Amino acid sequence: MRRALCAALIVCLCAPAARAELDAPRYAHTATALTDGRVLVVGGLGPGDGFVLGSELGPPEALAPGPRNHRARAFHTATRLTDGTVLIAGGFILPYSTSRTAELFDGERFVFLWSRMSAPRELHSATLLADGRVLIVGGFVGGMTSLTSCDLYDPATRTFAPTGGLVSSRFGHAACRLADGRVLVSGGSQFPDEGTLRHAEVFDPQTERWAPVAPMHEERSRHTMMLLTDGRVLVTGGNSIAAGTQLASTEIYDPVTSRWMPGPEMAEPRMDHTATLLADGRALIAGGFNGVGEPHTLDSCEVFDPATGTIAAAGRLPIAVHEHAATALPGGGVLVSGGMIVAGGRRSVTRETVILAP
Image (cartoon, rainbow, N blue to C red; front, top):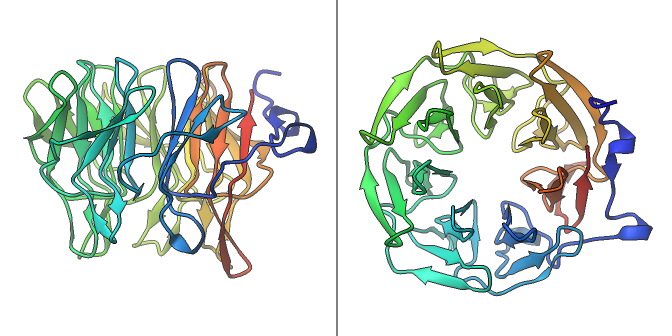
């Protein structure tokens, strides 16, 4: 059946018949689907939290070492532009600092951009606007502060320029472009206040200004947010400092009424998970970290169906992961790559990949 994402859904590329791995184990990386069907994997951290320099490139079932990027980065952003190039911006870099720099992957190589963002930032967001520009929002300057500053990247000139600042500083937030072209940002954390946010706000590209909207029902950071095909926005999970735990709750934002409504509960609390829009309009939620009881990484998957407003179990990953990457593929599948594993009080990093095929 269409909604049955059970064990039969999962095509494990780690199985002996079709085993696939990244060249290097990594988490906090990016994986971007290119217009020619290849996937570009960039950066991240490896075993011992060491930086991974270099990319991986190729068909999703056969990634191979790719060209070297100019900076070893983690917690950066990767945005595919309208011309098919990929903007890699900011992140945590060597020698253990936060970056203002960016580079562009043109399909064959990385081009370092001499224009810099107005502030160094990691755990920020990058959203492609309808006019082809990229909105870079907030972020964290390691060991210093959370940011209100934002930048606009113009692909015509390959330059960054400051734009209107956020109402509330934040990092580890979520962002998505609404159907009307505005950008919604929700939640996140503030530093040095050590708080998580319920606050949400909207950026208007015409005025380049932010305006607050109704707050979410729960504060959350390191959650997911995605635009559904009906124009509503789904938020899932995250971490709440006030609650002292990860969240199983979801919320749905209606831009017509500017209101948040509670959504269905997930089976397990999770943060640093992924949520990917499937071709049929459902959302696939995969992996994540759960600190309830003994802290552990999740292998479970769940599916949100906007037609019924319900979440259902959707089988399990071959290996538990969080801070992994999930990439929607042109054929309708989802590539899950890399990630961190916490189990039995130990941390490890994986190089495994798997394709989830609805």
